[in-house]
Amino acid sequence: MLFVAGLVCVNPTQAQSALPIINPNGVVEGASFTQRVAAGGLASIFGSNLATGVFVASNLPLPTILGGVTVTLNGERCPLLFVSPTQINLQVRWGVLSQTSAALVVTTAAGSSNSYTVALSAVAPGIFTVAPGKGAVLISNTGTFAQNFGSIPGANARPATAGEYISIYCSGLGDVINRPADGAAAPGGANLATIKAQIQVGIDAQFAIPVFAGMAPGFVGLYQVDVKIPPGVQGPTVPVTVIVNGVFAATVGIAFQ
Image 1 (cartoon, rainbow, N blue to C red):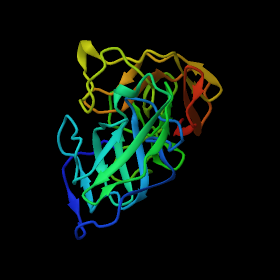
Image 2 (image 1 turned 120 degrees about the vertical axis):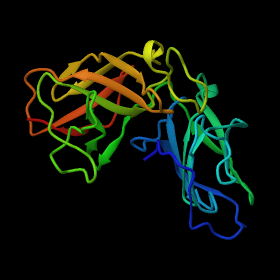
Image 3 (image 1 turned 90 degrees about the horizontal axis):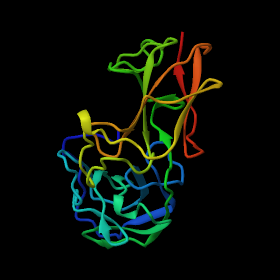
Image 4 (image 1 turned 60 degrees about the vertical axis):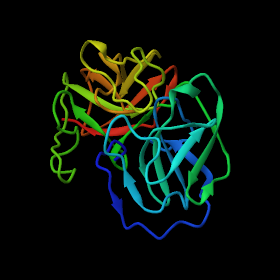
């Protein structure tokens, strides 16, 4: 997952000699891997020679150098969650919030990649998944996913029911009130980082207004949307999306009974 902890090196290679290469269309939003990217959210880079091994950030605030790798947007370093030879996960730094594009460069001990022009949007909503098509959606205030019993190895899951609240985990919902610093955990309590954009949640054929939409407390770049399931929803699988300033996230499914 993107919000992992524990600095780990897995099977490091010998000193890297080839320059890092970013694939065409290789910078994507971190939840649904679309081409839209927004400041403050998570993004992934795909390519080759991006690192000498697999390294995962262990502490907060997130580092801007991980396994000898840096990623810059317009010359300023981004916080890094994960680096490997073929993929990097990062937080898009808040400093590009008002821009429509930025130059991204990956640098390792071998040198710097080609400069990649990233298209930026004010919002770029995407919903994380636990399996293809299955949303990373919890029954609110629990650790239980709104999916069928036993469908997620190592995790609790059960179908949601009408009237329950669910928590949808997203990226790319844009600027927030009480904005945390780059790489820092989102605040909780009375200082929740709430989004500034207009948001709705599509559940089945209905639309609902969340009771909370903002950054997930204690995490970096991860957004949380809490909403009540309206009456009249029909299962066993219910499509869910979020709409931010008129931009739709890719639909995911939850289990419902």
